[in-house]
Amino acid sequence: MRVGRKFDSFQGIIIVKYFGRITFMKIISVTQLTGYIKEKLESDLVLSNVWVRGEISNFKHHSSGHMYFTLKDQASALRCVMFKSRNSSLAFLPQDGMAVIARGYVTVYERDGQYQLYIEEMHRQGIGALYMAFLQLKEKLEKEGLFDQGRKRQLPAFPAKVGVVTSPTGAAVRDIITVINRRSPQVHVILVPVAVQGDEAPVQIARGIELANTIEDLDVIIVGRGGGSIEELWAFNTEMVARSIYESRVPVVSAVGHETDFTIADFVADKRAPTPSAAAETVVPDYVEIQKYVSALSQRLVSGTRNKIAVFTEKFHRVRENRVLKRPKDELYRKIQDVDYLTRRLGQSMLIQLNGKKTGLALLVSRLDDLSPLATMKRGYSICRDSRGQVIKEAKKLNAGEDIEVLLLDGSLDCRVERVKEEYYGKK
Image: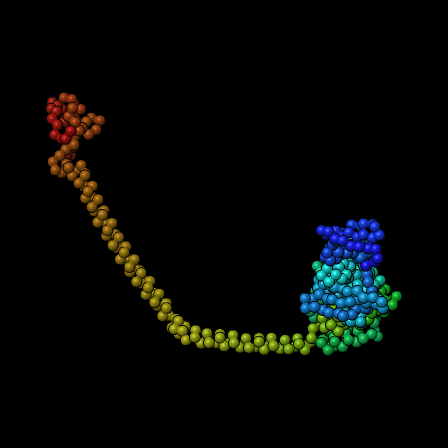
């Protein structure tokens, strides 16, 4: 404590007395102070998006997937965190002693009270400017649709002619030819020699792809080279090469660098292979494996055919022993017998029906006879009709002196009414 300074505190306020001057200051907690510093750091525009260069040390890849390490140079060290959601897209595995450049934002980890760099992207040192150019071109071509999955074509299953656009002296062409000759020796490989690095490389690669498209009956094109630094692979990150791949009428397989190397050509090509050797394996099938597969199919076909023949042979023998084939007329005779039986039943049924109808008819005739006037006349009755031929039912409808006709069973009588006597014999 300095001489002449005195401290008193009261309800969260500190009173500082210094040579007669009194100053009131608020007392805050460690958490409050840390939060204040955190807010200041996060509000700084420079610290919200900063690129930092340094060497990795104390690298730890946690089981959660997050990465914790320190970036240091000759004079200072900076604690860093790269969460799983960010480091999953890294094209390399960070290691202690590796020089990198990283982009992120600075804030305070409040529990420890230490500031940290929260990294959003990281690259090996030396590719910063080129990588920025790579990202800008990638974004441009992606917006134009050069990377669309819908436009990518299927590779032919059994190519007969393969074009290779690469350096004639590099290891890549030897690897491609070796793999193709081993897997499918009948495939014809056509080399289109080009420079794969240097100022002239983009022009030569683009022209090589155009030339390959003029080759008659070419099935697929492999474009690539062996591994190298980003500067050495840069020809495949140029717009000229990207557009030549996009405009190719023949499907293109990119094979640039090693498995972890990605170029613009990889995004445009119909298929990306991690290495030139892998490209050759992708393009042509393994002839030996195909022979084995065909042989297996042939054996299955023969075995299946034999099984089918055996099944049909057994069915044939069963059918041949069938009674229908041995005595085919038996079934015909049985059907004839059935027809005869049905015919007899039909005749009997018709006779029964006819007799029934006859009996009914006789009954109706008998009933009609009973109702017939002739039957009545046979019992001694007669029918009287007036001069108009109308049957006379009532005596009161006749007058004395009127002529009438009397019908008998065997003839008729012409009579004249002498007198009318009304007597009723029926029911009223």
